Length: 320
Figure (cartoon, rainbow, N blue to C red):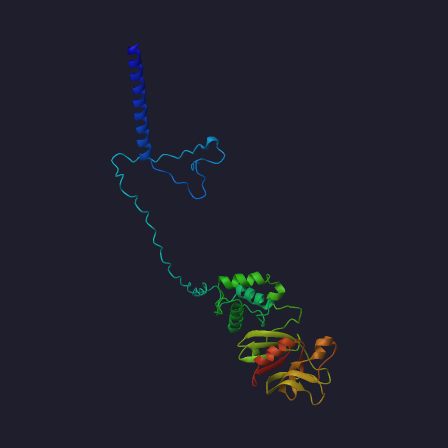
């Protein structure tokens, strides 16, 4: 019995000693752990890592930090990211105004027709120029000063090098603006009177060659007919005198002192008889007659002729 009591006492003492040792160990472990202070506005006992509304306040797992590569210096600070240096803006200068490029100069092409040429090609050229009022003389087939002047004017008007000679560019442009001349155009039969044979006295120098047979007047310089116009003469009571004369005076706006009639572009050649424009001839044609003067009905032609003729030029009145 005594033995049983001793064993019970020993068991109790051992149990008490084991409980005391366990309490000391737990107290020591609690003292070594850091105390956590609740954040401002946080209720004590609430897990700050827990997500609201999750049961039991289970904290949201955070990703584990990546392990450093083997051999890497774990104490080294991360290298700072270099800040890019701003590139200064280069001030822009306004573009210089473009310089105008000089226009290319047109050069004349090879000569096709020019001074001294004669023949059918020249006749065609003159007739075409007359169609567009650049050539006011008769078609002769001879390329002289009058033709060169007409060609030069045509070229200058169309910004073609004005040489007075025909090149391919000039001829192509002229053909584009005109039609093939008719036989009447090539032979100066343009609805007017057909001139007769030219008096030999008209073939030298400068002459107003007046043919009473064909009722025509031709302006001739050195044998070349430059202009042909229809004419009307005096009636039986006041015939136009025939023979060789010369221009002795000119009067652009003349009025007859005898008949008180207008005589524009008058070129006097024989005691009051003159070549001049007649509005009556333009109106009634050959139904009337002059008082002895040589009437012309083409106003533009006589105006042009007046500017060509000089005092002293020859006047031949004849019958062919």
